[in-house]
Image (tube, rainbow, N blue to C red; front, top):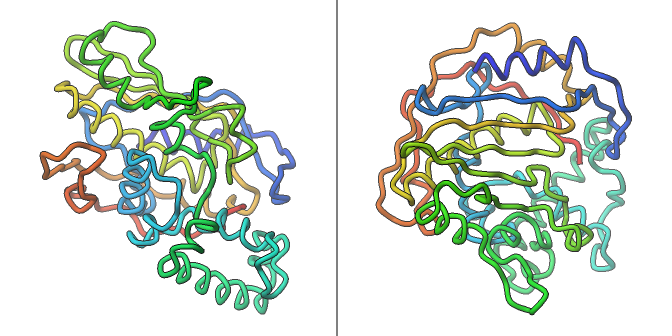
Length: 313
């Protein structure tokens, strides 16, 4: 994973300081590409521990076409909680402590952090136990799963892009249209977070499947390790569905940025030497949109310890 280390190093040494919507500020580069040969091992960052369990449950959530965080919470996955919670606290149904700008205040105010954690825990429990509440406030809008599996057409029908691209790979593997898009301009206003990983394309040559992702916006320290592993796993799952071997995952980024409050964590990461890559094991014959997350695991993943960093919302 030296290529990821190089990305972090390049932003620290060459990145441009920019303000951003979160108020934290970033150092960024525009237009960056990384390539990973999936035959050489599963590309997951080893200079800090990356929680693969969260990656696989999130990807399976996308592939199921789900847009409600209840499934994620049932799998102890909290990576989308803040966006759903933000929608709730801005609603007329919320009557708890003032949570305005909580993404920054959680970092700066210890008393506020305690209130936030209490309110968030109560919110999560209601999502899990109250169907009506989950239906209203667990929904994130027309995010990835909706666009991948049920893109709204003008005639009122929906298009399953994942099913379509699988059919194309099987029957017309030389097509240059093996594309899935999550960026639907009409639906962007209805999304809790507009898609960062916005478009991906497959390429088949001599029985080998490769995938290229275009990511418009990339949180290099927290998000990119997830994105690399998620799309590597997706490439494996699509190859498995279509009877192909895996080739490359190519990660092309628009705005690659390091948040200003992640700089020290990034320096610690760069002080560590990358370790051997693990092997992906899939112990199931189930289709990828029904497979149990427990059937997917990494063998011999032995990374350096976790490096914690705050998420910017």
